[in-house]
Length: 495
Image 1 (cartoon, rainbow, N blue to C red):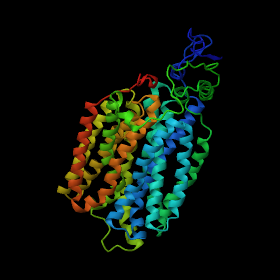
Image 2: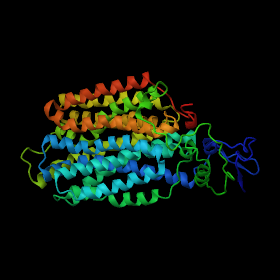
Image 3: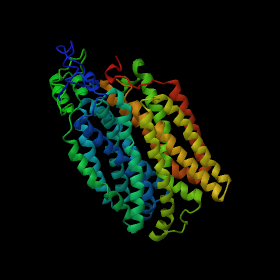
Image 4: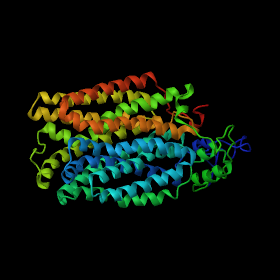
């Protein structure tokens, strides 16, 4: 039995249809039976998997840095300030990469940047493994961050612009959820290396484990289609139809052919958009909603994420002695906290699963508001642990951190990423999403750099209390500037 496209039978077929109408249509069998849903094509799944891989590597490298930190510190005899530099280097790179390359994917296309960013990631990762000085270590971590920052707007957008509207939220978030998978994998890899190869170069082995799979992803990204929606926005209709045909290739084949409606307005190749466009009245609300809550949530998510082993070591009282100057002493102190961190990181996965299930049902704004409030509660519970001892203290620590991880991933960590790629019109979507990610990473850089310093100066309780306040502010800002994008056609945004 063959399938026919509703577009092929539409009275408006001769004039063409929009790409999103092709993406959202439900096929009809030749006998008139309509399919229950629009099946994803092989190319759509390929794009999704390759975008998810980028988020996996981000989670793995960022969280692995937290596990490797004691060994790196020993290798380069680092001070508290240098600890902050190492923790912040990757995140500072993400900030720069998101801002710079977000704009490039609007100009040069989604695919070219999609490939370039992963090639850069592999190159800088290989250089990191061979670092011979503290300065080079920080430079290569910064370079890794630039590559990962490129992936923030590009991966989100290339998924959003190539799939049906009704599943956009769950597909984007399920790809984003691989950040949590990567975080858990990075922690597990770090733990495994500490146990099986506890030498002074164990941290190099950890990062080297990521290179082979990342190289495979670089090659695979060469064979995906360009975003037809981006091509249409540039007025390149014939190319858009060709790439849409590849994107929607199915067995049995439908639609029979793709005839796209020419856009009323196309963006010239020579047009340049500046960040000032994001602050024009028509885009300002979207810019605030996409950027400020992301900044506030990154203060907690990355600070807690990177330094969870360190915080646990302090709270559980098994941190390394100030006189621990041998690899054996450092590893002996790191293993229990790393193991506990891996258990807590499981809740990142549970949270993102909740976000995937609920984003297209409940909506982005309610989940983000409730998530921020839940983060505040979790951090408050963890802060209370200092007033107790023994099993009660341990219970409060684990309950608080696990609740925080769950609520941040069902709420602000997932929803800020999703919202930033949906609230801007196509011609500045990369610019807007990149700006939001970059602005958010200012918070990540600040907390990563200041966390070890503040941890030593003001203590764990005061630090966690400050993050409680920022989480509550995030809930308020989200509600005041709310724009719900659940089920919204991206082609209609900005018109």
